[in-house]
Image (tube, rainbow, N blue to C red; front, side, top):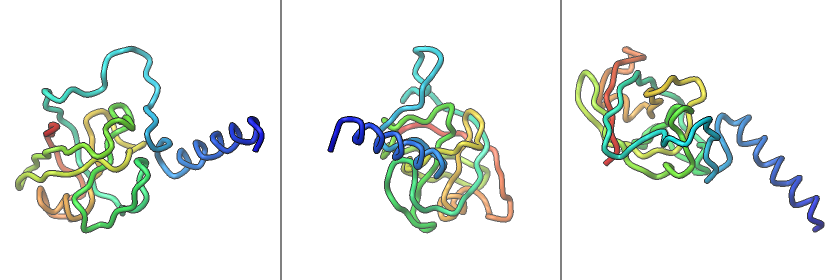
Length: 135
């Protein structure tokens, strides 16, 4: 395969990943400054929703019964794939694994699998205030 063909395949893979709602697996989102988007020592606040889980931006496939999360695009980086978050909501807390990005989420927001969301609030709530940190 010629160099141009390999490059074109890489571009196509990146476009497909973006169309699926994320970035190519293992690729960080470009930032305008050099500050890290997240710190393992910090606690973040935002809103949590839930979504129909499937193929995530991290390149793995999961089910609605898995305890997984999509991280907002302002804080998402491919380097965070597989990291564990502890999420605290109105009815409890749950530990989830970052497997996806959430393009529609604001800074601090998370999109959780239905199974994970039910640990912190009933699905009927739809959206709840949360705090979260890395473990």
